[in-house]
Length: 216
Image (cartoon, rainbow, N blue to C red):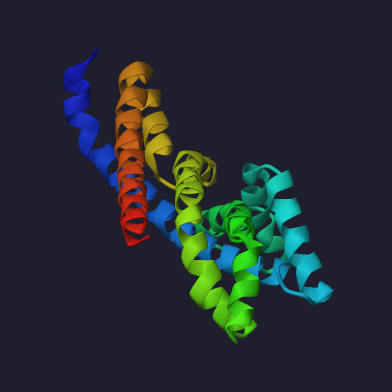
């Protein structure tokens, strides 16, 4: 293990980790927005809203995220869409993870006992009030861990943005390996930064889960 090399390059990896964290955080936020829209549409009564949402989920879950990113970044200019690597990475990852998050949200909402909906209606609540006061508060806790798993998967999957020349952790590791020929040390260092980010997300998920458990 070449600790001298690690001491020389860790600052570059730290900067790259900030880029990875930035891309991941923005993608998660975009994914949550997309997921909320998809869930609202997929659970709505009108078919013209339901089917497009389900088609979106099927397409983005059924095709590789890397291909989706390539279509957006390399294929976009053919139809007038020119994106910088950062924007393409955030949008590509966000659109992909949004499909997975929507299924986590939908599953949590459907897991709430249907009898409580009827009870709410018997109390004179309309559909919107039933959703806001009964369904969503209970579904929120059920969503936490699945959404946490989705977020962790996105952080690990963010490695694909290196393929469009975004200087994140994996891109940085490859760049230094080409000049030092020390893949073990450099990939190990990148793994430490990934582990730190994933541990931080796991900590937040645990805290949120404990908070909602105390609220019940």
